[in-house]
Length: 175
Image (cartoon, rainbow, N blue to C red):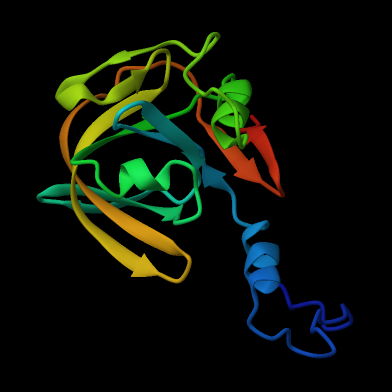
């Protein structure tokens, strides 16, 4: 026996389609759970920011991408950096994610634990996994740039479960 769809349930159709806007994009992507990463780079000082736009792009050669706003305090360093760090955060690192998302914060001050890693990139301690990537392109995309990086080093050996971002909040996976 096959189940029939419940035709008595109302369809959820907006009265008017929403026009393309930043608000529409934000509203839709609040429904999209994303992993949380911190991107770092070194100029005259270390910089970093929290990103939920991290993507795996290719396996051969191994490449990643992420978006960064050109108005971000990190952008001037990222615009010139030859290498960047990518850090996958664990579910218990909500405060670290918040620190790197906060405007005006001294992101590398205590309690943030970090060291200088390969290619001089700031590498955060205690994360689930990290990569150092050589920047191969910065693609204009509205008020952002999409940064493409080729993996040159990393460590996948962290422990725990990933931190997620959903509905405007940091979250953990549920069992």
